[in-house]
Length: 84
Image 1 (cartoon, rainbow, N blue to C red):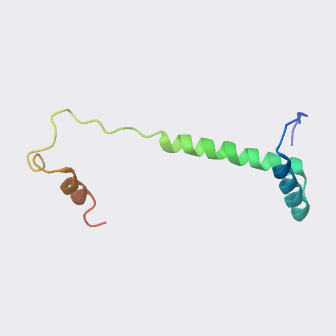
Image 2: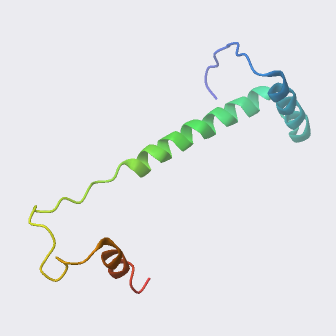
Image 3: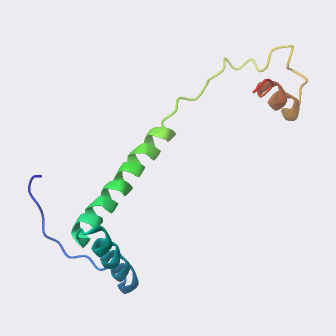
């Protein structure tokens, strides 16, 4: 799997005991669970950043068309979601 770096981390006692219990139940190691957890956190961060990477819709600045000019937000919202 490549090289490994040895490190020391401090974990709350109650959390460590829970991890040890889960490791025993799954017949794996605390190290394997720790690596799995770190990978999940990093993967979630990447997914979250991709979700936020949207391109805003930019209008030409002239405002709504005549058809929608006098509509309030509730009426606009209802029109947007009509048929869904």
